[in-house]
Length: 597
Image 1 (cartoon, one colour):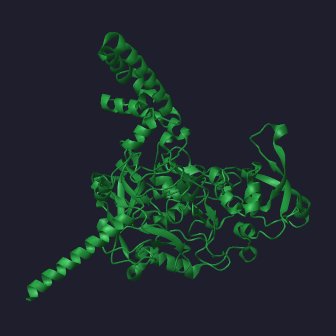
Image 2 (tube, rainbow, N blue to C red):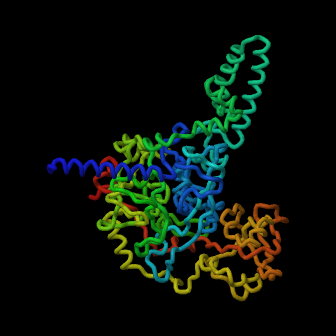
């Protein structure tokens, strides 16, 4: 056998191995990113396999990044694109940490999945709170990452392979944006429109039986429904199909919801051709010192594999991340900034530009710095055929970008070499980031009071110690950085069955109640040895004479400690802040508006 034949056979077998590996990856992929079935909505997320109701969508949950009082620190007369992607911090038990309005950036399912209220099939839950073993008295990395993590997403209903995944933004999200988005259907609009269509169909049948033709009724439908001036303002009109083929299918199915779900389903072959696998990484404790949590490969990934897409939210002026000294609930803008938003650490920038690009995607916010030696993935601009990337914007100015009120740029992370299942996924944040981190660790000193600091996490982990009554708190108060809250989920009696079965942790994971400040009045032990508490909670949204309510005999799990405003690790004066640096070779010159002189 000649050397040329040997080389040919080697190349052939190498190609076969690569094809088998790629096919295996595609078969395993549980979640795909591809163009949404909703027109002009950018990327959507699709099921790569069947999911049963209640099943977790992927290994681990989403990081949630708090954005603290940004319009207090920066004013309200500017457009913050993140406002269209953030979540209600109160619903995620995060609102106590600021003094004005806290927003919750949830860059995984919370930002990447689209919303169609009547097709809502993925639920998201409250994140966990953990400092990942770091303490402000000894760790320079304390406060450099978000303690809110593992925001789990699960199937609300049975989901079939290929169906687009939709979370619920809530009706108000669409109603507040109707001027820009038009009459997008909200909850209940599809069933209402279905009933109107089926009523017309019954009339059509009667008309047809009488005259032997339904052309006239079809003409009337086209005139008064499809071409109606109300079609641009009525959500029910907007919900109706706009051609006869679709109309007949809806009549046959007797459901616009079933029809829309079929429309939003893509075949596996199409997803493989036009999509990017989105569940290649999972959460774990990072192998990088002081980094907290990290991202780890869920499967073997070959060199050149796209690890994850990174749709980007642009912010034209990085000084919007600045935070100022506070005077009560006001800020002193005349003074120099005293800190920066934690979000900065999760965004990308360049030394010569005011622009920040903040990526979102499934668990990609967990990917840590590996430097030149350990990094196994790199950044590149995404292929427009597989993403919502619009490369023409790379040639536009930052001033033009500032006017764009939607995400139109996408990068992706690509494997530099073969990555083994379970290996930490790392990227190079750049020499400037590394130099800044080295300088921070050298100069770092604990903040005042760090030696005696007790975090809310420590108090919440201690489920054995008795909670202090209001009188005991007077003599021996809890640390000044925390307050105790009552979880309204425990107003329902369903927790009692979970207590008997030992599944209260699962019950709390799916909590939907608000947290309200409370005082413990007393405790007792029931016949089974369970500690039960009686407390008074305060609800400021009720009438004045109804704001205080008593709750009797609820378990320890009904209470949670939260951070008071501006006491969290990431809001201290000595925390590390620096954007991830975009490599020179892929950063457009047109964006370099901050050149050094």
